[in-house]
Length: 314
Image 1 (tube, one colour):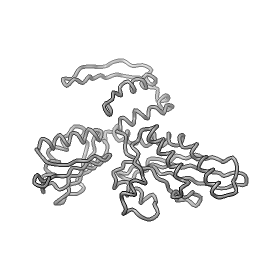
Image 2 (cartoon, rainbow, N blue to C red; image 1 turned 135 degrees about the horizontal axis):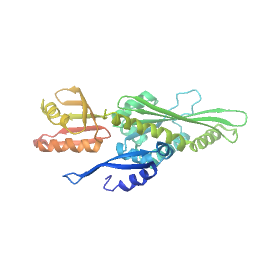
Image 3 (cartoon, one colour; image 1 turned 90 degrees about the vertical axis):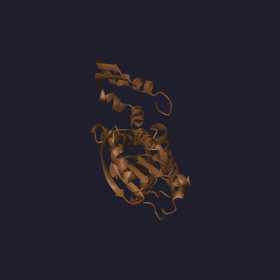
Image 4 (tube, rainbow, N blue to C red; image 1 turned 45 degrees about the horizontal axis):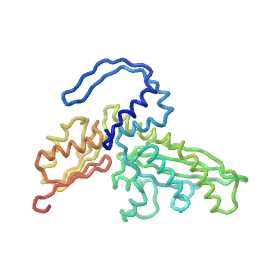
């Protein structure tokens, strides 16, 4: 189920095109009503790689990670990412990642407006640090290089992706293109280059989106789990640590953990789990409810926050 809707039919319809043969090894009904089946299947991976639609399934499996998309211009030939003419290109990239691949895209301009501490010209390092602050899991950087020739403009659209939990570089995809002519005015040149770049967004985005999602999938398939940040705020001294050790690390799907900070008012841990962010969040909340604890909670991508509320100051 996803957002209250059955996605089984969607997965089955895709699987029919990829599975050429299978036989059932084991099947049974669990006591909780879950139906379990184990099969041995022959899968045509070539067909999977040819279909953009399978990104839908991968996105469902990885919980539609939160991504921020922004422009950069760190080359001498880069068109400035802060001019108004650049906005339609970024908007096209946002549309593809959100509407076609169903990433949870966070609006960069809105986020910056709410965080006035981020100032100055935006570069890759500042953007990554800022994205971590707002709970994004992935970042996509859009860059457009252009070089005028005698009769046209030679351009290159570049998209890069970074996993924000550890600043790991997930991949880079690019496309070269040429404009039909060379306008005389600078503004006309920029507009023509932007329009030509927009036509290449989808193809470049498909390749990069696959790398981003498969990066998340490899973590799970290698039994390493997805990395989460779990934060307990203002809990009585020792309570959060005790709860974490006695309850959280015993939850199903736990792979490994590391305590990052333990002070009077904060307990922060890195936590690797095979569960999705929603399932892990629900399990921790369920465990806290059994402790008869007053708290507030928030889920931001793979950042899980729990704040203790004193019963006298609710």
